[in-house]
Picture 1 (cartoon, rainbow, N blue to C red):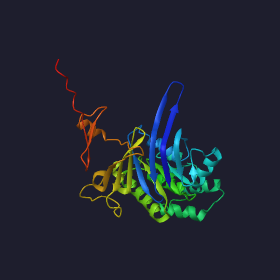
Picture 2 (cartoon, helix red, strand yellow):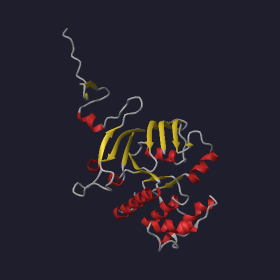
Picture 3 (cartoon, rainbow, N blue to C red):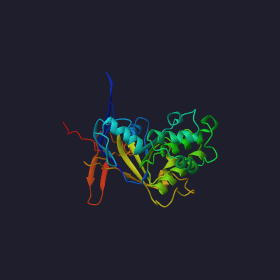
Picture 4 (cartoon, helix red, strand yellow):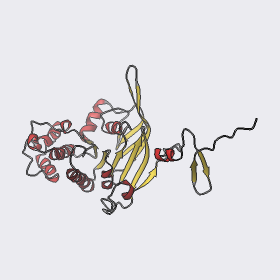
Length: 294
């Protein structure tokens, strides 16, 4: 569904140049539900904006289904955003029109596409648990209810791909769990590919794969040990360490990002010693160069 190869994004001003993505590689299969995590400034939101057709890459390759987003014209991107991808922001104000009811909000993207389907709009709101609230104005809905309306809006035109930027960042834990359960239902029953950007590691047990981005590159992947379980054992409290197995990502030319805590523990700076013993690769801090006696 998604294939990024050597993806680069550079933001330029008159006196400043910021490289947000530095040759990122990422593949996401159709029907997958995965999360992207990373610290502020790691490039995760830039990647999501490119996948959503909201920003253009500077170089590299990025395709979503049949769409080549690097070469797409402005008109192509309008059609892509209208028909192929749905987007959910953390800030409800970017998703919703406050003077309309919940139902009218869901119908709005349908009207722009010329495919108004009131029965499906009502069904979406019922699926997100708002059957009895669909005729309420947004001022009459809680923050969590508004975010569920936003999910219904994103699915109004039956997209193949759903992108969510910190979708649970402004709601409480109970509502967060409810939203993730809604995502999982749409993923399983409708086959929608879902990519979630978050800094909340507690969401990890709700998805099958987590990709960590560091300094504009994919660094680590966490794959669920048992894909048939929605969460880790409550005895362990869930999270990445218990629910998932960690893998360091090796790119096409053999580069990998070693976790910073490993490098710090070994006092490795700009160089490392690497040995292959026939079965495993051993990375160590380089031995100090001994000075020859005068």
